[in-house]
Image (cartoon, rainbow, N blue to C red; front, side, top):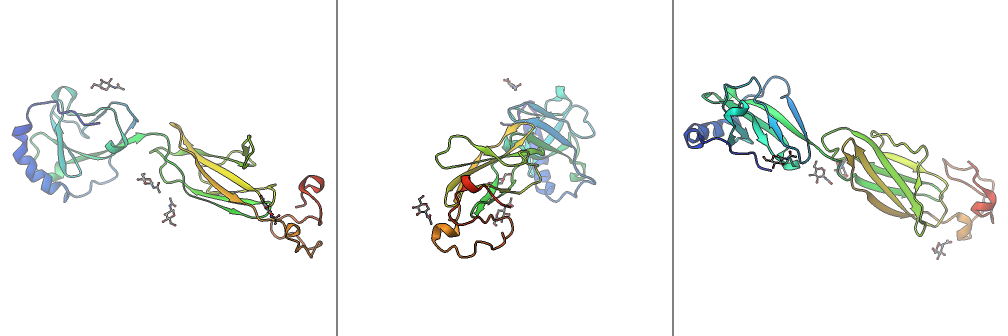
Length: 243
Ligand SMILES: *[C@@H]1O[C@H](CO)[C@@H](O)[C@H](O)[C@H]1NC(C)=O
Ligand SMILES: *[C@@H]1O[C@H](CO)[C@@H](O)[C@H](O)[C@H]1NC(C)=O
Ligand SMILES: *[C@@H]1O[C@H](CO)[C@@H](O)[C@H](O)[C@H]1NC(C)=O
Ligand SMILES: *[C@@H]1O[C@H](CO)[C@@H](O)[C@H](O)[C@H]1NC(C)=O
């Protein structure tokens, strides 16, 4: 969790650090993005001071001094048991440097399975439902896909959408051949190279067919959109679907 405090020059560094601490936030942005170092969740990772050091360095995070790096590891900062909290921008100042312009930055990314999808919602029609979601936390690596399952309440088997592969860029799917006036549960989760994110489950009830409401008056009306219109009195099994 905590960067290790490896050498004993802390007190010596404290006075100049106060100045650095105040000025670090004002330091001009480095040209170009800082180099990235990637660690998997729970790994130990050494952050190298960009440009190298002569064996000693002071590390800063959010404008505050973190720890002196170990001279025997060339000024690198060791982050043990990397967690999500360790992710972020680290500044490195070579021992002896005084100008805040000398601070070099490196960004630590902690690879992990994705977080839950957010804004998951369903718009249920008669025999069609539209499922919507958004990726919020991809786990610091690109998503490899989204998994989607659904079933009527009381069913054991989950069904997959067609086609089953949901690309990471997709944010909604239409699901067909549902039965009217039934409650379904829909489950979605994201995946990346580190594994699967937690599933999010939502429920929605399809609308009754007009015939079920006793208001079915237009048997030859054209199907609107992808809604299915069936002759009155037909059940799903007898008549199938007409698209
Ligand atoms: C990380 O380093 C600590 C000691 O610094 C060690 O106890 C631990 O086993 C290491 N963890 C891994 C995953 O290498
Ligand atoms: C989720 O919805 C809220 C409110 O509409 C919106 O502010 C937020 O940006 C959405 N999140 C994502 C990841 O799209
Ligand atoms: C979105 O992800 C961030 C971390 O990347 C997290 O702090 C936040 O709570 C997430 N938002 C939702 C709605 O889950
Ligand atoms: C919808 O289903 C419920 C039971 O699940 C039933 O009580 C209700 O009458 C049905 N509605 C219609 C219009 O068929």
